Length: 216
Image (cartoon, rainbow, N blue to C red; front, side, top):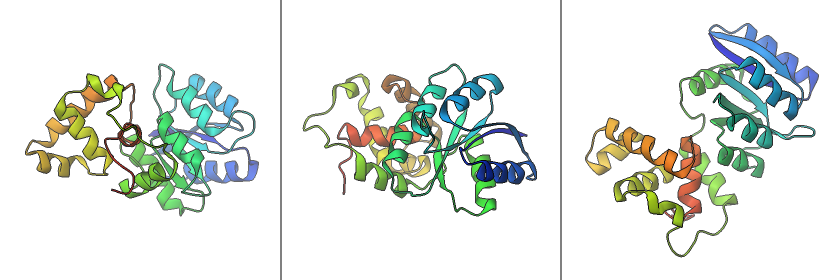
C-alpha cells in the first residue's frame, strides 16, 4: 500500500481527494492537511510515501512547504496539484525537489497512476513539459560554465546535459555507448555533488548553469 498525505485548503476538494484515494486499490490516505505549516507537521509525524500538495496554500505555500519537508531526514515524493501547467510556482516546486505535478482537472485514473508512478521513483510529467517550464522561468544562463559544475567529471557533465534536453536514461545510454545502469550510476554520483535529489532538479540545474540553452 502507498501511503498518501493530502494537502489542500479547500475542504470539499480535500474530502473528494480523500474519498477517491481510499477507494483506490493499493493506496491509503495517511492523513490530511489544510495549509503548508500543517503539511510540514503531518509529513514529519506520519511519514507518508507520497504527498499530494496543492501549490497555492494560505500562509506557507506549497513550494515552501515542499522545500521544508524535503530538507528533513525523510524524503517523501511530493506530487504538486496545480490549475495551470505553465506556472512559476510549479517551476519553483521542481527546483525544490518535487517529483512532478498534475493539473487539478486530471481524470481520477490519472491521479491514481500518478501517485503510483512517483511512489516508484518516476517523474510525473513529460520532459517537454519540464523544459517548457524551465525555459519560461529560468534566469539567463551564465556566459561561462558555472562554478558548481567544477566538481563534475566530463562524463557526468555530459549526462547532466542530456538529462536537461529531456532524454530518458535509455536514449542517453545509446548516445554515449554505455549501459543504462552506467547512466544511472553517473546520475547517482552527480546529484549529491550538486546538492539535488531528483531528475526534475537536474533539468533545472542544466538550464541554470548554461549546459542547456533555452530554445535549443
